[in-house]
Image (cartoon, helix red, strand yellow):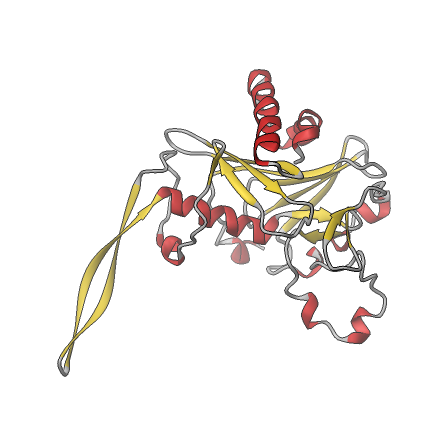
Length: 268
């Protein structure tokens, strides 16, 4: 959710339990304004909160003018490390809330000694900060979304905020096809020319949610007498997207434990 409309955004998303105390809202609004100024971001998004056993991680993201350029992620307003670790998927369970905390994982590695091959157990240590980076990236790629028309692609290829966007109509707001993944497209590149014939290249340049796997991984509901549409991810519980039809108000927030629902395919 955009920091400039933080208070309104939190109010709209509050129905999903993503509320914050008045003091926390005020301090967030002030600090995010300073983050935007000090880091010279074009936009700052309050990404959300990952709940830890000891403390929580409050996370923000800074965007450049090109909205699909790599986003800069900050937690507790510190720049996250850029490196990604592939082995973090072996870590299960809740976050502690301490970035210096280390998880231990035992894995079997093969060791060659001449013509003989031995297997030995090696203890691998993974920092929580590294795991945090990996989980934020996974959530971004899987469930960060924007409504169709909120961004547009210029003739030069950059992706900018569409200042003329006036919101989705009520009928469009009820369709998953009206929402896109907020990332570089993957499935779009595999579409045939015939499938792309009815698409507007300046608006339809990201992957739609309608073909997400597993099918049924999104819950879409109309609230407040059809004045608000809310999408919730069942794959990453805690991710809530909201949009007020026929207005510019939209955004998403994640408040959860940072754990993926790997059992979802068996629950649908």
